[in-house]
Structure formats: C-alpha cells, structure tokens
Amino acid sequence: MLFFLLPKTMHTSFVGKRIIVGVTGSIAAFKVAGWVSTLAQEEAEVDVVMTESAKRFVTSLTFSSLSGRRVLTNMFSAEEEGTISHIGLSREADCIIVAPATAQTIARLTYGFADDLLTTTILAADIPVLICPAMNVKMYEHPATQKNIEIVKTLGYKVIEPECGNMACGDYGKGRLPDWHQVSEYLLKELSDGDLKGQNVLVTAGPTRERYDPARFISNRSSGKMGFAIARAAFRRGAEVTLVTGPTSLDWPAGVRVIPVVSAQQMYDAVMSEFSNSSVIIKAAAVSDFKSAEHHLEKIKKDDATLTIKLVPNPDILQALGARCDPKKQLLVGFAAESSDLEKQGRKKLEKKNLALIAVNNIASAQSGFEVDSNQLVLIDHNGVTELPHTSKIKAADMLWDYIVKNKLLKT
Ligand code: CTP
Image: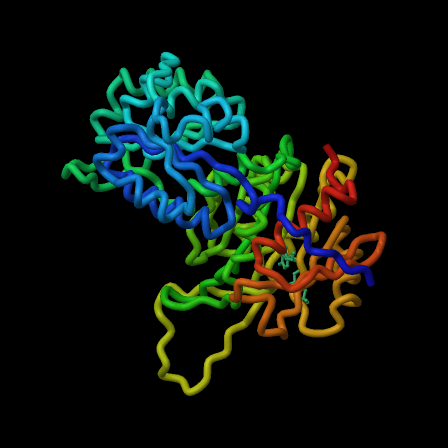
C-alpha cells in the first residue's frame, strides 16, 4: 500500500497568500472586518487599503488590529511613503478584493480613475481583482451602475453579485454584501493554480430518501459533506461544477450549479441527463439501495403491532454510468462505504461498476465516513492502492483531486 503525503500548503488555501483588501465607504465595511480577521487567522498576509469615506464607517485601527499589519489610506502620506508604493503594493500581492465596493468606486474603476491609493493600486495591478458591490437596491439597479458593472467585467475584473435581503436603509432588495463563506470560494478560485480549468465535473452527494407514506421515508446517515467538499474543491481549482444532491442541511456551494433531488430514481434521472456533458463524474452520494414496493397515500396507522414493508431495489446509478461512460473521454470515480475488508470490497466495486478509481471510506470508524467533518480515504485504481491521511473533508477532497491530476487521470 502506498501512502500519500499531505502537502504543506494545499492547492486551495489562504496560507502564505498576500491579499489586498480594498474597503470603500459603505455600511457593509463592518462585515469586511470579520473577513480580514478570518484571513489573518488562516495565515494570509492582508494589506487593507481604505478610501477616505470608508474611514467614516470603520476605523483603520479596527483593520490593523485584525490584520496585524499597517492599514494604507493615503497615497501621499509621508509615513506610508517609502515603505510601500501603489505600484509595489500590487506587485507583491496575489490578489485584490474590493469589498464593499460602492457605486462611486465602481464608476471610478470603470473610467480608470487613479485619484486615491486604492484606484491607483488597482490600475497598476496585473493580478486578479474581485469586486463585491454593496449598496442600496435602487443604486445597484440603476442603469448607470449596471452599465459600469458590465464595463468593469470587460476590463477583466471579477464581479461577485450582491445578495437580496433587508438593507441598512430599510429597503429590501439586491445589494447586500454576500457572506464570507460565499466570497471566500471565489477568492480561493482566483488564488488557485486552476489545474481543473476546462473540466466539466459532475458530483453526486448526500443521501436519498425513499418515501413510503406521507410522513415517513427510508434513508441513511450521509450528511453530504464529502460530496459538497469535492464540488467546492473542483470549483476552486477552476472546473465548471454540477452537483446533484439528495436532501442535506448544508449551504449550497458558491459558484456550483446545484440540482436538488430526493429519491434514488430522481438522482438517476438527473445524472443520466447530465453525464454526457461531463469530463469527470464523481459519485459520492449514499444512494438508498432499496425503496418501498408501495407508496401509501395515507399515513400508516400503528393499529397493528408489527409492520412489514416490502422493499424492492433501486437502480444502481454508478453501475449504469459504468456501462454508458466513454472511458477515453470521461473519468468515472466511485465511492464505497465499507465497514470491513476495505481494499477487497473496494476493488470488487471498481471492477463490477467499471470505474477508473474508487475512494473507499471506513464507516465503522468514528473519525471518518458519515456525518463527521473528517475522513480517511483509501484510493484504489488499476495501478494500486493509496492510503490518504486522516484529514478534514475539504482537504481530503483536495487530495483526491491532487491524486487525479498527478496520476494524469483526466481525459481532456
Ligand atoms: N451507488 C449508486 N447507486 C446505488 C447504490 C450505490 O450509484 N443504487 C454508488 C454510490 O454512489 C457509490 C458506489 O455506488 O459511489 C458504492 O456505493 P456503496 O453504498 O458503497 O455500495 P453498493 O454498490 O450499494 O453495495 P453494498 O451496499 O452492497 O456495499
């Protein structure tokens, strides 16, 4: 058995990255203080650049306390000058994120203004620039703002759409700064080396539910965490990702097209209509093998002391894919939930379902498999067996992609 070493810095992490956070004058600036704190805790080096109006909402002391670094505000400050210039600032950074970006800042970027440190830094940058508009709904929807947003996109800046919701001014609508768990995915994508660019990835996740009366269903312990992590990691690494998921309590991953399903038959139908457009298919879902032979329209009463439900098999989606996929153009990866004989059982499924690779997880361990946030995968393909270390599900997902890329399993 081969062992896979955990790289010190993962493909998709903030460790050691230099990020410029441009803060402009919107009430949402207070949210960005939390982002800076998180980035610093995740070992990124964060240089905050504030506009004059941003300082009316949050002090520079807030940001410097959270980032542990100086905050830059003034292009001509004697104190700041000499240590760092607007050219040097972006030259040494990996990425710029402007959040919150006001209508005013977006307009200035549209026309290439260079009248303060932030706009000058952006104009001098040849690194990715992300813009997170945040403003009143009417300002956001105004044709002038919409036109400017279209123009900044053509300049190569990535614009993250604001969310809908209640606004500080009392209005309701689109214009709220999205939450960090969404924005961080886009930022990680810009920071990754994009080794899955050009791949169309289809992932399945979660359990399926097989209803047998209006109140009850048969299901399993799957939380969907592993499949969601695989989809998130693929998006961060540049793939176009579709996630077919059974019912879970997880937030849908940013940037990923999600197709929610409930039963195994629905998952089968969704996967069958999607797979031909995919270059990689990873079936991490825990599909219910059986469903009730009958669906009772009325709730079953407990009048009888015992209840017998006749179960009939569900279609095996992965096996159907194994028969239909083109192994020259598509990489088909299965998962196996096993409680013993991991290698033997995994290899059996690899052959039976005609897979290129299978990831086996030990569901008998409290540290891996269902519900928990960590996993230990054993990868089996036609070359051998590789045991990944016990790690978080998002790192395990990244390591699965590392394995696929390093072993040249991708078809396009
Ligand atoms: N799978 C599937 N459709 C099913 C059952 C399983 O697509 N009806 C897929 C799972 O998504 C997983 C792989 O097959 O990728 C293995 O699933 P697992 O539950 O480990 O094994 P089964 O094939 O169901 O066999 P058994 O329950 O006997 O171990």
